[in-house]
Image (cartoon, rainbow, N blue to C red; front, side, top):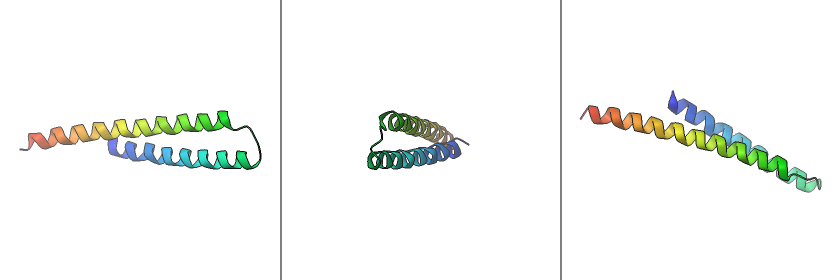
Length: 71
């Protein structure tokens, strides 16, 4: 379950990061102010990235603990 959540959050991070790049370039081409939108997308991407890493670390800790019991 934790590994699935980690993959889900990392996928969301990739989608938000891609959106961030698209918004930044389109806004720059159209000479629109984009600082706040890009900042919010960047914060969202980092939140999803951190959630992914936390779940991955939890899954790794559980897997290593279970592995130690079998030795």
